[in-house]
Each structure stands twice: as C-alpha cells, then as structure tokens.
Image (cartoon, rainbow, N blue to C red):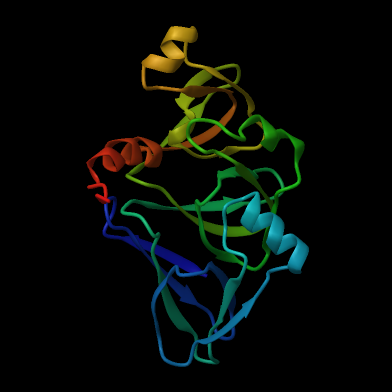
Length: 227
C-alpha cells in the first residue's frame, strides 16, 4: 500500500494505491472512491467478541471493510467523517502506538489492535471522551483528527502536557499520567478539564481542534422544540 495524503489539513483525502491482489482494511464509511475492479468484503475483523470490544470500548465500527485490488492493482480513497487531517503511521516491533478512539481510518491487514490493555482505563470518562486503542503487528495505518495534526518529538525525560481532547496518538514506550489541569476551581471553571503528561522519549500527535469543545459551542445554539 502506498499512501498519498492530499487537500491537507482541513479536508484531507487519503489516496491508497494497492499492488496487484493486495488487500487493505478500512473503517466503515471511510471509503470515498475506488478504481474499477476493487472488491469489497465486510467482516467483523477477528470475530464477534473482538468486534464488540472494538466498537464498545474503542469507538470503532463493529464491521470493517476489506478492499482487495484486482490483478492489475488499484486505488481506494478514504476520508474521515469530520473535517480534519489524515496522518500516516508506520508501526513495527520497535514503534507501536496508542490511538485515540475514533482516529483509525485504514491500514494494511498486518496491523492489529488490542482494546484489552489495562492502561486504557486511565483515560476512560475524561473530558475529551478519550479511550485508547493499542496497535500491534507491522505495517501502515492512516489515522484522522478533527482539525490539523501536529507532531511533537520528545527527548528522553522531556515532559509535555496535552489536553485529553486533543490527543490523537503517542508511542507506547512513553509514560503518561492523566490529571486535572489545576486545582478544583481551575478544573471546573477554566474550560480545560483533564490533561495528560507525556514523558519522552517518543512521538505524540496532537489535533488542533477538540470535538467536545465544538459540541459545547454548538449544542446551546440548536433551537429547542416548543411544546
């Protein structure tokens, strides 16, 4: 799979070029277009129980789509459901990632996800609605964000603090600690909620917009039905 991301960062589109007979996996609803001859197979991606954990715990679709190129190869284009950016991650034995729930868009079949790791509970119920998926295997993953994606590379021992609603992904070797942004007053009235302290070495991907902040702005403006 060769990946070219265009129209960045507000309305990114991932152009996935497939080798002859190559399969790729994509989140339900992510496909925008595909070349003639591509076949589609829909499955649970590892069985019903694994699909249930992925959808309930990880915020992904219960069913996943597998696109298979014809003998001459082909192309599939993918996009996230919200306006925002796409980013290509390469995972392997020495570099795996934690992904924000909902960030997954597409990947090679050699990439897998684990929703059973205990550390995910540290993020559950945060102000950003953050629950992390853990990558495994080797291959390429296309992830998405609401807004643009920026990368920070942390040196050994360097600590960087990110609002939980802006986390997209970070490398698994990094230590993290979720905490209130300040004291009790700051936590409830600053509008910031919870943050996560990440300790390097490692990489962290940050989205420039927050879905929860957008909903906080939007919902009061929706007209209410009068009885």
